[in-house]
Amino acid sequence: TGAVIGWFPTYLRNDFGYSAVQAGFMSAMVSAALAVFSPVAGTISDRLAARTPVLLCGSLMSGICFTLFLLTKNPHLVLGAALLVGASMAFTIPVLMILVGERFVTSGAGLAVSMAGTAGQISSSLSGPIFGYALQATGTFNAVWGLALLCAFGRIPFLFWTRERKFHDANKE
Image (cartoon, rainbow, N blue to C red):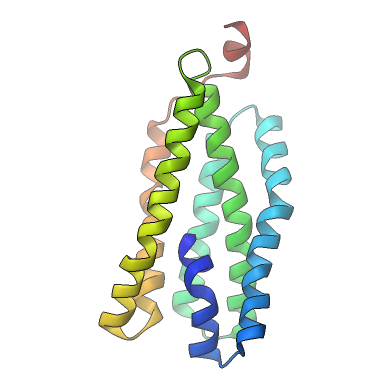
């Protein structure tokens, strides 16, 4: 999903002819979707009393978005997919931090959450040069979106290995 924030404006300018201002505005809408959907994702995970289903949903939404980026050149679908990326980020980033904090509630939650945040920032930073190389080597954004799609779906198996503390277990300790 970091690929969208980093590369979406350039994609809109190169492939759709948007001006810098238009591309910047559309890119800002991704962040707006993240802000709007973060409380929604948190509420859903609280109501379910589980974090991994929400994380799975966010990963699937992200995969759908990158699939749309690969398959369509319709600017309206691309913009809709970008908004969905913002929602998918809301279903993954803050919910993951909650999951990590709850998982390590009695043994270093602060360190665990900060390490998860650091890993996320490093991954996001690496997406710039990696996706940039893919774009430069192939000359097409399909390489960028294809790599992002692999990342989105590649994280799903790890969600099935995640052991979640149940809310009542965490509250007893």
